[in-house]
Image (tube, rainbow, N blue to C red; front, side, top):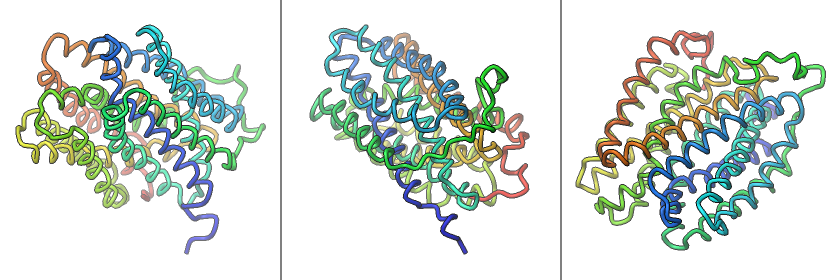
Length: 399
C-alpha cells in the first residue's frame, strides 16, 4: 500500500508537471509555424535551417551550465528567472523589424527555454519519492510526447486564424501560467556539503552525465528525424492539399501519442526498452511513408497516428532510462544531457533539411531522413543495450 509520501500526484508534482506541459506546448506550437513566420518576413527554407542551427548552438552552450547551476547552486533562482524572462522575450517576435533581429530573438529565446526546461525536469525528479519515481518520470516523459503531438496543431491553427500576434501572445500567456504554478512549488535544494566546487569538477561532468548518455543518444536519433521534418511539415501538407485542414494531421498524431500511454508502462516494466526501439522504428517509418506518398486523407491520418505512437513510446521510455541509475546530486546534469540531445539533434535536423530542400524536393528530403531509423536500431543493438542503464541490465525494472 502506498503511503502519503509515496503518492505520485502530490501538489508539487502536479504543479511542475503542468508547468512543464505549458512550456513544452509553447515551444512546440512555435515549431510548427515558425517556418511560415520566417517566410512572411522574406526568408527562405535555408533561413529556417539557420534558425534551427541557432537554436542548437544556444542549447548546446546553455544546458550543461544550467545543469551544473541546478546541482551546485540553486534549484529555484535560475529556473524562475528564465521562465519569467520568457514571458516577454517570446512576444518580441511580433515587433521584430528584420530577419537579423528575428534570429537574435531566437537565440535568446532558445537560451531561456533550455534553462527553463532543464530546471523544470530536474525539480520534477526531486518531487518524486523512491516508490513513485519511475512512474513519475514516465508520466513526465509522456507529457513531452503529448506536447509534441498537440502543440504543433494548436500553433498552426493560431497562425492561420490570428497571425503572429495570436501565436506569440499564446506562448507568453502559457509561459505566464507556468511561472505562477512554479511560484507555489516547494524546491528541494542540494545541501552545501554535497556540492562539488566548480574548480574541482571534471570537465566531462560539466558537459554531460555519463549514465544519462545512452538514453540521450537514442532520443537524439528520434529528435534528429523530428527536427528534420517538423519545421517544414505544415508547408508540405499545405502544398499537397490533400487534407482539408493540415491541423487534422496533428490531431491524429496526438491520438497515437495518447494511445501509447496505455501500454508503454507495461512494456518497459516487463520487457525493457528493446521493444520500444524496434516498434518505434517501424511506426516512424511506416507513418512517414504514409504521410509522404499517400493520396488518401485517411491513409495520411493513419500515418500521423503511427508517428504519434512512436513519440509516445520513446519519450516516456527513454526518459525513465536516462535517470534510472543517476544519483540525486547529478539530476541537473542528467536533465541537461537528455534535453540537449533532443534540442541539439532536432535543430541539426532542421538545418540538414533546410539544405536538402534547396537541392531536392520536400518529398525526396523526407525520404532521405528515413535512413536515420535503421541506424538508430543498429546503434541500440550493438552499443546502447550493453550499458548498465538499459532495463535488462538492472536487477529490477519498474515502470
